[in-house]
Structure formats: structure tokens, C-alpha cells
Length: 314
Image (cartoon, rainbow, N blue to C red; front, side):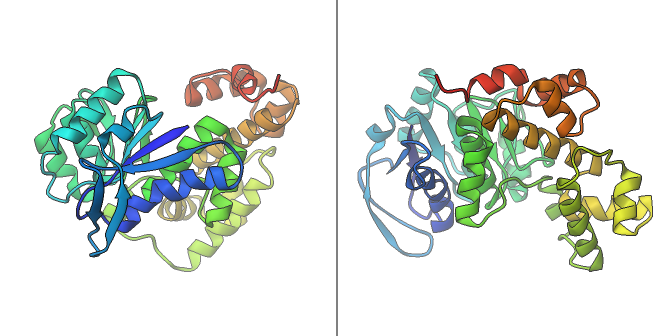
């Protein structure tokens, strides 16, 4: 896969480096033949927000045949994007190449009309601005990224890492995404959305240690009934206190977290083994194979059998 990443004057080095680090790590680890190219409105160089000059930047023609186009950020004031970038985005959409707008990179995608009538996300600080400019977009503060298949948007700053790992996971499987995350020393999957940061910082108190311990224990016991009462007892907390502390620490509910982890483990087993669907359903703690199939289809838009077939070598 060839990935074209847009750069512009005043882009921060972190935003520009995120897709390069994640996608180039795929190649460095020998997981797939992925290459990245940085392009801008004109070939030459761009100057970062930190004052460094980045040379060797390609022109917009470098994105003409890209399998994925990434806009990793944008200006804080949400100014109109350049005609050259708009042409790249419209052309990529016309030839059905996926497009990702990370953090404020959502703004140019919205301007190109790619998000009209759709849900999207951007940095929480600019929700108001994006809504005023594009009221036909449904913004969601409860997620770190939203993937429509052809268009991917992510929340603020570090959420770009989550979105890029999601691309790896979608294209190459959970095991590949875990390998990339492990090498970059980042979480392979984070729960929750920006709401936890908008309302308050994540608390660093004694309850954090209790929740972390429960999470580790639950991951090792996915096949068992993991009710709220069971998890709260492991944390030595009341049901009400545990639910509140869990949401503070993870940004989601215990039930949603357990369901997501069971589905993650099910994907791993489907990708790497030949266990029957019924065994996977049991090993991952689903009540039945029927329940497993229903939840899997609702979450990933495909059946477990079809998903497994994507990872079966001829």
C-alpha cells in the first residue's frame, strides 16, 4: 500500500510524524509492503510550526495514485484549504481511495464535501468552529476516531495514533497492529473518547490502580462471566463507585469494555487459528455462537467466517 501524507507550512512535527511512524513501522517489521510519501501543494520544502525546514517534499502529483491519502492536521483557525489539496481530496474520493483526516485534518475533508450528512470527529477544542462552518456534520465527542470505510476522521492530537493503528488492524489484522503498537510502545487500542478530557482530566488516585488491576484480571478471564458485580468485587468497591471509577479511568462502561475486549480476542483467534466458531464463542465468554455472530456482525459489518477467510492463506 502506498500512503500519501499532506504537509503544509506551520504543521507540527508530531502531527506529521504520526502516520509516518505507524505506517513505516509496518514495513520495518516486514508485515507488508507499505510506503509513505510526504506531499504538499508544491514540491520542495515546508517549514514546521517548530521552525524546522523539512525538505524533499513531493508535489500533489505524488498523491495521484496513492492507496490512502492522509491529512494529518490543519491550521487552528480552520481557514479554507488550498485548491491543490482540494483537488487531491476530490480526485482521491472519485477513484475510491480512502482518505483520513487526523485531528484538525477533518476541516479540509469537510470543505471538500466528503463529510456532508455524516458523523465525524476532530479536536474537541474546535467542535464549535467546525459546526459553524459545516452544520450538516454530526460531531461525536464520544469516540477517538470514526471510520466510514472511505473516510476516516480522528479526535485531537494523539488520537491520530489510534486511527492509524486502526488502519493497520483493519488491513492486516489485530496481531499486526499489536506488533506495531508494541514496537512503538503505545496502547494497541484505547477506549473512550474526548469527553473525558473535555470535562475533566483522568484522575490519578488510588482508584486508578484498582481499575488497572481489574482490567488485567478481566483480560485473563474473558471466558468467565464478567458481571459488574464480579468486577467491582475484584476492585473491592461498591457497584456504584466502581462504575464511576471505571468510566473515569477508561472513558467507557464496564460492559462496553468487556464486550470490546472479547471481540478483540475473537478476532485474534479467527486470524491466527482454526478453532470452530462455537469454541471461539465459548473461549471469549459469549453466551452462545449465535450471540457471538450477532455482536461480531454489528461491530465489524461481516460474519466471523467471512472475517477469517480474509486471513486464510491459499
